[in-house]
Picture (cartoon, rainbow, N blue to C red):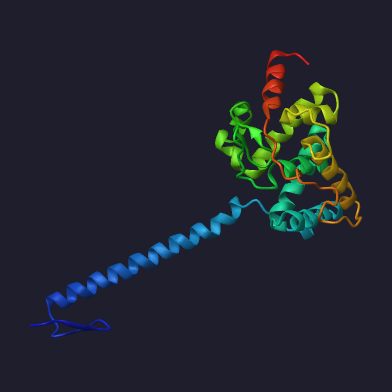
Length: 239
């Protein structure tokens, strides 16, 4: 006889029907269990998120987070976490947080997964292969793509370059391996953005678009070889 199932009713009822019903119930239970596991994984994801409420930040930091979010089209919550970390790491390294944020802006546009042709990676475009040991405390070199880990390592590298060069300008040149001093050069763009961010932090109205930006303003740095030289000097003990 043929079996016909309609809402778990079989005609005629028999062993085959019961087997089918049991199989369907097991499948439904399995799907429900999987859904529960999926929902638990989603709930845990928030603990891995790099984000913060801008309303919880001090006024200057909130000003920066909102302005950078508009300019670089990045969520204000992730930027709030980055701004807060820039202030904390900057205080430890004795670097202005607005300088750190300016480097991030020019280097990656706040893209934590950015990578240059020469291997500079993450927010601060750190040469991971040169600074692998700096990532050991963060679980290994793949942490180059973790925003906060990359920021902290990038600050270490920038601080080393500034100390060895003896000035902010010289340190930035070492950081990227560039000597061009034109307004659209790496150095010129970082210093200009640093100046704008200082004004933003103080509550001044600063246009999102840079009126002095020329055709070369979006050209990416091609070097970062300076990080190699800076690290060699640090390891050798030479200033």
